[in-house]
Image (cartoon, rainbow, N blue to C red; front, side, top):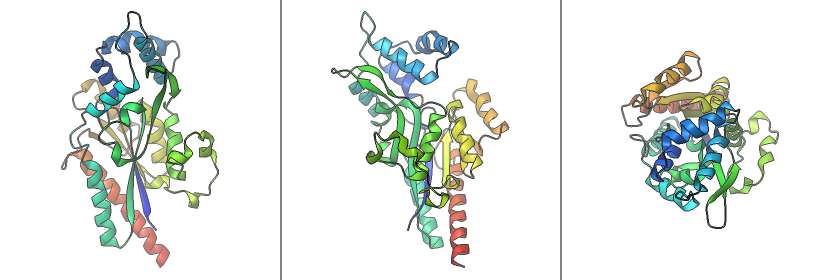
Length: 286
């Protein structure tokens, strides 16, 4: 029987630069104006950030005179073009290899699964070249009109919504069979029935939308890693604040190349959990 470790990533500004802003620029929109002059005023009126940006994307697509239409096809095209932070496309196989090597050395059977929980747009994320590495991706999605244009939010993943999907992972409520069954996550399980306990989870994220996941993972014995973009100095203070508040186990620049701080943090996190699994096996076997 395999012992599973889950590594869960936020997406925007964690694995890649903000995909929503990138899409807006790709479609010829004024990105600064979109966020500062249209979305920010809604936040001041009490809107949640995710419905606010989706609402204005729909409004911009339907504007008169018409802009370039925001369609499912356009999302897919942009997703296929996304560039990632250094080393991000290779880190998944690297971590798989580390778990496999550890398993051979310690005579255990440990496997890693990767997930994404994002406030971004699902049709963008599902089209990226790294999608194949993830067991499942949860993100905000849109309903489309008959001609493929965005018409209305279908589902929204916001701050605390992200923690819901940690329970999906832990309880094994994953895959197409659970699509359209939103209340299944409330199914009561005894702790020993959890497919992946929280203390075998690693969460990697960059921002305030990740704070509930950081807190839940840390509280339950898992590992939370904060990342930041070296090129965005205005966000460094926020990132350091996660360390000062004890919300993350470690903080590193968004560089997944071998030898980087983030690479080392992920490898050490995996090996730490692997060690605990191996130790529990030895204690159980006597």
